[in-house]
Structure formats: C-alpha cells, structure tokens
Image (tube, rainbow, N blue to C red):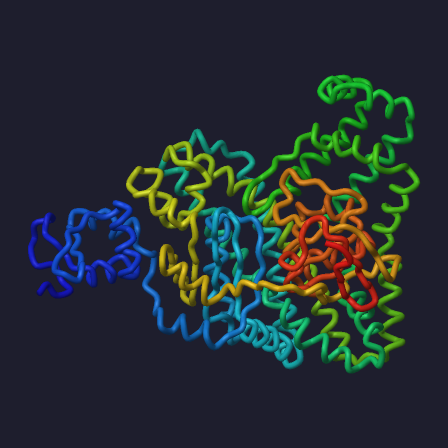
Length: 584
C-alpha cells in the first residue's frame, strides 16, 4: 500500500490521493471531480475506486493551483458554527478587494479583538462580504472604550486616516502620467507592487470603521434610545446627530454639477440648440461659441470622471457623458426645482443649528456628545473612503487590462487571481484554468498575519452551505430602519429590483429595491420614488445619500430582494419602517 509520500524519483510515478489532497490544499472529493473532468490524469487501483496521480501532472498544479496558504479548516468550521454573520454584497471582482480582504483581518492590530476571519464569497463577478456579528460588535465596543479612556488615541487614528487618504490620492494622481503599455515586464510589476503597498496602508486604517453596521443597530442605538422617551423621535434624532456637517462626495459632485446646469439653463437659446444638435457637433461648436461653459464642463469631467466606477468595472465618464446628463436634467426637471435641490445641499448651516438644538433639547451628556461626534467621523471616513476607492479602481482596472493583454487572458478571468499570482500569469508561467474555476464559485478567507486561503470546488460548496442560508418565504412584509422619512408617512408604488445598476433604468413611480447602494446607484436613487435595501446601518451609503436628497429610504430589511419581485405593488409606512405587499 502506498503511504502519503512519493516513492520514486521518476515523475511518471504515482502518488496516492491523500498526499495530493494535502499538497494542493483541496478535498479528496474535489480531486475526484477534477479527475472526471480531465484536469488530472489518474489510474484506478483496487475495487474501491481509489486513485493515484502522476507526479508530472502535479508539478504544474502544486505551485500555480495551490490554495495560496494552508488554513486550519476545523478551526474555520468551528468559527462558522459559533458565530452569527452579517453580509454586504454587490458586483465585484476579487482581485480589486484582495488587498482589503487581507487587511480586514488585521484590524485587531489597532483595536482588540479584531476579526479572526474575513470571508468573501465570489461567484460570476458578484461578491458577498461575510463578517462575524459578535466580533464586529466587540471591535466597535473596544473603540468606544478607548474613546472614553484615551480619546487622544482615537483622534490620532482618525487624523492618520485622513492623512493617508490625501497621501494615496497623490499617489493615484502620479499614475495618471504613467503609460502602462510602454513599461517592461519588470517595470509594470514594480509599479503594481508599489500600488499594492500604498493600497495596504490605505486599507489598514480605513477599514477600522467597517464593522460599525451591526454595532450601531444592535448596540449603540438601543442605548441611545433609552435616553429618549419616544422611539420615533430617537430614530430621527440619531439620524440627524450622526450626519457629518460636510456633504458626502456624491452630494459635492451633484452640487457642483447643478451650478453648471443652472447657469446653462439661464439661456433659452442655448437650451434649444443643445436639444436640436448632435452631442459631438454641439461640443465642437460650444468650445468656441461659449468657452466659459465648455471650460466649466471640462473641469468637472476631469475632477469626477470616476464617480460611476464600482468593484466590477470602471466607467470613464467623458465630457459627452456629462453633456448627456444635462440633457436628462432638461427633460426631467426645471430651473426652479434644480435651484431648490442646490439650496438644500448647500444649507449645511441649517444642519449644524439643528444638531445644536437637539443636543440641548435632549440634554445629552458630554460623553454622549463625544460619542456622537465620533460617529460623525466614522460616517465621514466611510464616505470619503468610497471616494478614494472609486478613484483607485480606475487605475486598478488599467492594470488588469494591461495584464490581460500581456497574458492573452480575459480580464474578467485575471480578476480572479491573487495579487502575488500576477507576475507568473503575465510571464505565462501559470495554469489559468484555476481562475476559471474560481470564477464559477470561490471563497477568499483571510486570517491574521497577511494570510489568505482561496477555496474552490467542493470546499467552496461546503462553505456556502454553512454560511449562506437560502430563505424561501411567503411573507407579505418586511421591517427595516427608516434612514429618511421624506415628505409622506405612507408611500405606494411598484418594486424594481436592481442588484447591478449597469445599463439599468427606473421610472419616477417605481421603488428601488437592492441589497445595498453604492455611488453608481445614485442616478437611480434620484429618479426613484423611494429606496429599500437589504443591508446597511445608519452610517451606510443609502442612509447618507437619501437624507441629502430627502428621498424616502428604508434600510436593513435583511431580505427585501428575496421577498419582493419586480412589479410587486407595495406600501411603505415611513413612520414604522414597514414595507407591505399590496399586490403581486
């Protein structure tokens, strides 16, 4: 009987399945599946259908297809059994978050206990982040304890976070002046290495605020609610007092663009010419006829070309795109409505006075005020992080596209490589079939000390079954938290479920239902009647943007995208955060 070792030096020799399983870090069942699909050559030995694999076939796979790092699987399975999990999902390519996945499991370097594991499920360009509720809450409690005992430490870390944003933005600006296709293999790898070094520094600080969603909903708000007799008033006060005085980056871009649109609409003649002239011809003409308008549009484009990027793709917005946005505004609105929207966005002084008034009215303690100010900083950091990430993704996708050309591999396939695998891929020294298998379904699991394992095949199926609980429900309603009440206490409309906003549209009488919103959802949010999300707490993107828009929004329903279907007629009760199906 062959033991778990190689018994001859000739690479045509056979190795038993247990040795192969350990060598590649995959289960025996996965290996049997590979064998049937022709990925590994093997011979049957004995009546039990055992297999032994040829050494020459394993030499390729032992390096390229090894699951990056060994992991203590029993420990991982026990962790999954012992913890509850919260999830965020959306269109995403794993390589764009690979660095962040590793840094997520290192946040305990700043505040104990941190996270034991950070888990991402990826399947056909759609990802789900899976984190422990218990460890997320413990991490945030640790921050609040430090805020009470050593506020200088918190303030210092928050300032470091702001500093690293500026530092990283400067680095990204440098990449604007580098032509990747002109670089040698060594040069482009050096640039990519430096890029990831800066990205690690960025993630290591900015991810400290990531676990706040379950903490705010399950812990802090409940404590805050006890200070106020009226539950509804507590929700409204909390939403106001945790909102930063600075506009979100989405609102800043919108305010800047509204100024351009309003200035443009002052001229009825100019408006008529735009609507009757093809875009390219209009831009060629306006460059000479109205230089000030063209210059302001050009400057806006150069400043915000990245604003509709996401983790699955980058969309480089051109001047032509922004001119089309102006056309949409002409068709859908008028100058008085746009002016009203601009004034609402600009009126931050009103928010400041409202916060001061609430603090006095509720007679909040100094410690509570300090905690709310900290949550304002957390909200600001989460929003500013999104801005820097969207800028970063423009350059990340430039790297991916260049790697794709050099390796002659689909960029969507390369996007399933781990960062350290890129050099081998572009040197044609990597079996890229493993990337195709990862794209079908994989789990990226990181754990302290910059370690990460990628599970595929049967191992991924087992993890999915353990972590993702499919819900088959005949429920007629869902409950969530009111992020923004809007003007009406009851709203009725038809559901439109959108998980990926690319090439999607929505009507003014439709209610946007999604897992969670991101900046590329903003045009859809603006047009919709209301917004409902599965995920998110009071500091999430949907909450911040909906309040800036005064758009009715219910967040954290947990299952709206699974309960409702596009076309369902629903009723939103904005005083209670209830969404009820009226007609399917």
